[in-house]
Length: 356
Ligand SMILES: NC(=O)c1ccc[n+]([C@@H]2O[C@H](COP(=O)([O-])OP(=O)(O)OC[C@H]3O[C@@H](n4cnc5c(N)ncnc54)[C@H](O)[C@@H]3O)[C@@H](O)[C@H]2O)c1
Image (cartoon, rainbow, N blue to C red; front, top):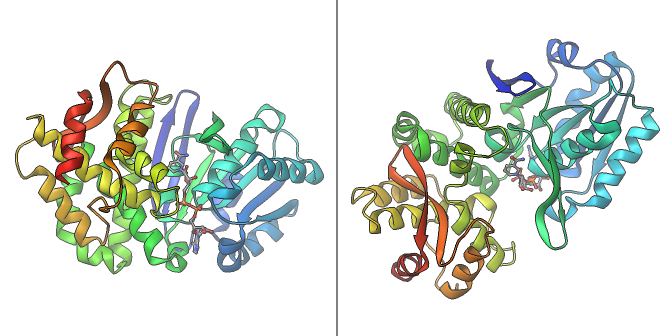
């Protein structure tokens, strides 16, 4: 097991990365104190909830809540169900919510923990690669509103994150690959060694070799921890984590969130952002091709589908509140391993879209 300690304004918390962690009693004894509400979804519960049984029985005072899976359930109504169960459990200020699931369960349960009695503990137990390398670390919690993703939420840091690599064995291939896109992102924006390591081990990662996977999760968590420690509330460098996301979000929205996994849209978005960086003369020729090749080897999409209207994508990208006049704020590359925030003309973005 490896541990990354994440520093934040009010203290710090450990992220445990390894195998066999869900049933490890030492972790539970260290982080659970009062009553415990375990929140999961149907898919995850079917495979992994049973592994918590012995530790929960030993702890005594607990309830389990299993919700329907999927982004469409990241709602105020499901948040209310978590709160109702906390009330039924008789949870006090020393209670803990354990979020066993992907980013949806993590965000939703984290927000319930942030708001119940003005804040109780949450332990994140992420079960998707995306949640292990990204969503469970950093303290962003929330639910969706009919008019926008993550419109309702709070910053609420977990007391611990338990990334048990064994849980990933039951994850579908598309979700696994989508998570790898975020690993590539850390390499591209701030860690050239990680990027080169991914190039050297892409095939082993594609076939989920346990040692490689452990290293990929550990290095990603270490990178995310460094970024959020330096900028807990996203005032500065945390924005770099949005590399590929402005294009990616636009693509997800224009395709009605049905065609692409988040990580897939981000993979296409990262290649577009790298091409734009070259067009603007910021990055050397070949940067985007190298990124494209790695993502391709990891089985991720790298090109916009032909039937996506570029004007619709651009329109979505202009909606970002941080934009000014005809400039759009984006994360661009100076090299693989170094990213910056830049405003760039809409015309240049359209040119890259048209070339792709
Ligand atoms: N808080 C943050 O900083 C942050 C960062 C990135 C993304 N997010 C959020 O994360 C969410 C996406 O997360 P996600 O991709 O994990 O989605 P998800 O939670 O919907 O999980 C994807 C699917 O995999 C299933 N699943 C989860 N773990 C499994 C396992 N081990 N075996 C089998 N099936 C499993 C789930 O039931 C679901 O159907 C979005 O809502 C996004 O907004 C949050």
